[in-house]
Amino acid sequence: MLYKRSSQLFVEANEVIPGGVNSPVRAFKAVGGTPIFIKEAKGAYLYDEDGHKYIDYINSWGPMILGHAFEPVINAVIEKAKKGTSFGAPTELETKIAALAVSMVPNIDKIRFVSSGTEACMSAVRLARGYTKREKIIKFSGCYHGHSDSFLIAAGSGASTFGVPNSPGVTAGTAKDTLLAKYNDIDNVKALFEANKNEIAALIIEPVAGNMGCIPPKDNFLKELRSICTENGTLLIFDEVMTGFRLAKGGAQELYNVAADIVCFGKVIGGGLPVGAFAARNEIMNYLSPLGPVYQAGTLSGNPLAMAAGYEMLKTLNEDALIFQRLEEKTAYLEKGIHKVLSENKVQFTINRVGSMISVHFDANPVYDFETAKNGDNQVFKKFFHDLLERGVYIAPSAYETWFITDALTYEDLDYTINKIKEVTIQE
Image 1 (tube, one colour):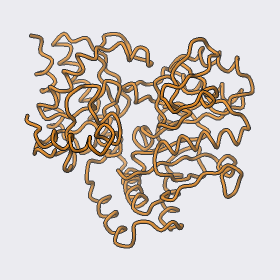
Image 2 (cartoon, one colour):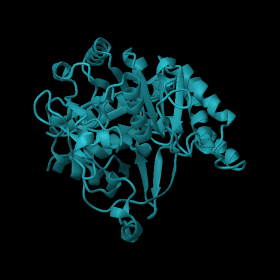
Image 3 (cartoon, one colour):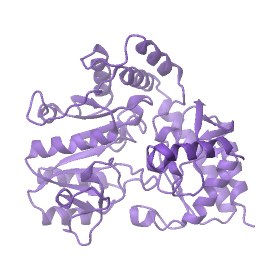
């Protein structure tokens, strides 16, 4: 394929935008080459500025669970825009979507909307610190909770080692209150609690990791985290920005039958518009201003366009009794097909999947944390990515990102994808 228009747009973008993009992974640095610039999308497909069509397995990194330009969402946004795009004052729609979300998700009484998943996770940690009157948090290596300072921490050595910043601009003072744990390693978590007794306000985790590829929690890992947090008076925060309203109506809490203390949302809850949210039971949420002492605010929080999009999205997911079954079946079909062709072509690989989140790791060994994810052959992935792109299949431009499946995909789309994967992995 020729990408003349995209290449020119990238040159122009670099003149006025750092790196030519507004979020780093879009720059294709991990895979090389020039990013494609998207002109429009519909259903399961993207169309770039050069007129090429792609089957989309990114789906705006998760929100487009029902497909691009989903008609009820688009119509709701258009109608709401005609009445004004922002008020900086309460609207009835905020209450309607809040009530709907609370009815769908277990273990929450109240929810507050913000403008991004980063804001949601940042606010959840602040609320946990205020509620517990403690300062330290535990996060897991390889889990991404947005670009707030507390979360941009690299792993240290030893069970009680404090994190160190892995981005300039994050102070050592901020980093010292963030403890790094190993995903799926309960003994490592226990050691951190033992070394920091009565100091840990919250433990935050992606219940299904999506930023080191899709990595499921091991059996009972989440339940053991729940027990440890309860024993130590620590709040368990589920970052369900990816998994919320995607793996089930009630997200990972419902899927794994584990009750978090605070839950963070994004992506699907906004129907494709910039939305985040965090939620908990009454006694925790009532610690927020204006009821309590923990301050959190946002000029565009509860934006009417975002609320309109999110409400229509959640309403559809709530009313469609078979949506999650269809997503499960389609993603399982894709997994089976990829597994078959990669095995036949003698490729070293592992596939991880939970519901409609799936990733292919080019390593024959199990992938269960960030360290094992890094063992994948990135050179093979780069070729895999570009060869599929040339054939009209658009997967995430990074080996450390999950694919997101949309209900708009047909089985013909899935068969086409499987056949193209067979083409690009046939051994010479």
